[in-house]
Length: 199
Image (cartoon, rainbow, N blue to C red; front, side):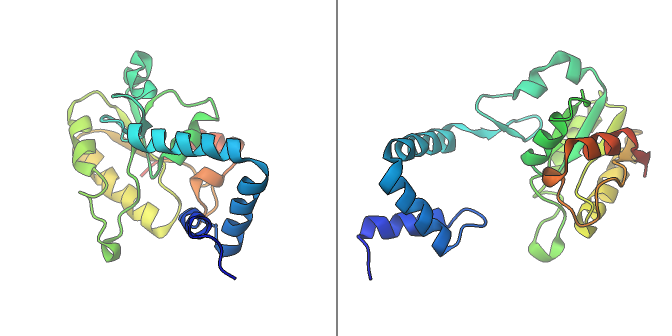
């Protein structure tokens, strides 16, 4: 059975989200059509506004709906002398939820993966080098995911930091190998930050 072209399009478009297959997309589409058209309209408006107005902060590369994000605009954080490098904006949120970190961030939006064509330029490491060259940082915390790619990325950045006399530390291994930082509970992240060690 075929549905109307618009319903088919909605079901197909919902599948762009991770973990949403044809059946899940169909259930979501039918739920919105049957029970929550007003909520769906709000969601559509919010998606449209967000996609048009949210970009990357020019300093840390996390998401921002203005020029410089709130964290980078905080003078106390800028004066901390500590910058934490993470793979994704979701990792920033995970660390912020602990309430224990008061420095700034740099978001890579991925990790080094030559086989996928992702090198230093794709991760913005030239921008990170510029930040470190500014001389405002005494420590760089490498909070990349504990995977082979995450470790490789951390070691590459540690060498960058060493050439600039910035101490590079790695978050402790309270986080399971192969895990994703964004899915780890706050207590584990807090212990990992507290137990970080030099590379």
